[in-house]
Image (tube, rainbow, N blue to C red):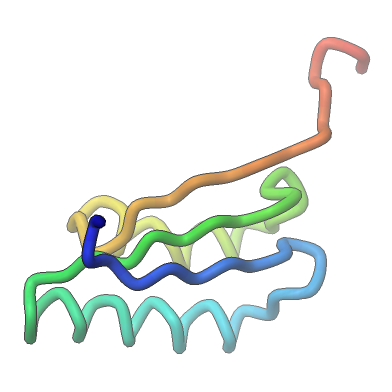
Length: 77
């Protein structure tokens, strides 16, 4: 229904190169046909700063819609 591309990642398994490649593709898709990419990240709390920084410009520009899932309960720390 959204006409968006759907990509899913595991934050445990995804490397920075893979993330940057997908972000570049998402940016190009938005510029060429106006369609966003929905990115689902499982265990998002496991992303390091470099991985987070790879997503940030694409989220801010609206190229991707980021959805994250986590089992981390910060209250239990």
